[in-house]
Image 1: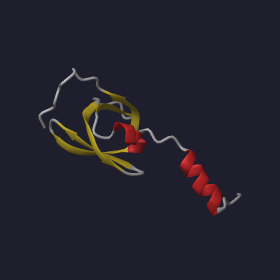
Image 2: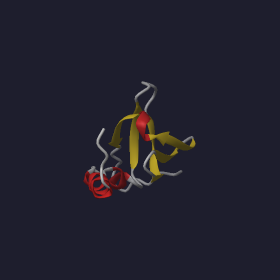
Image 3: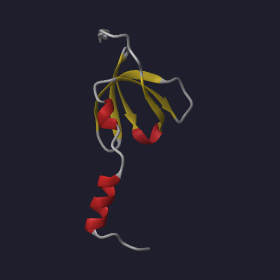
Image 4: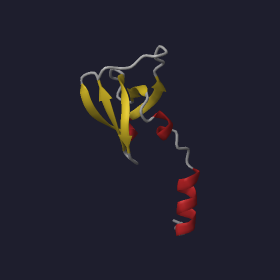
Length: 83
């Protein structure tokens, strides 16, 4: 097995798409790989492994590896969610 140098590791990390930051503060619907009900909420924060959502029922933590899809939920113009 070949080892990657530190330079190769850092350049690989930088080339990965970073779309989650675009969704921060937006209302999204997340579908999990387990096939359960979709989760709708606003992305408060995230790190390499987790996304923290504010939902109508409270705050939840979703592990990124359990996510099948994420889509932005369109809201009417001027809509402000009351959380």
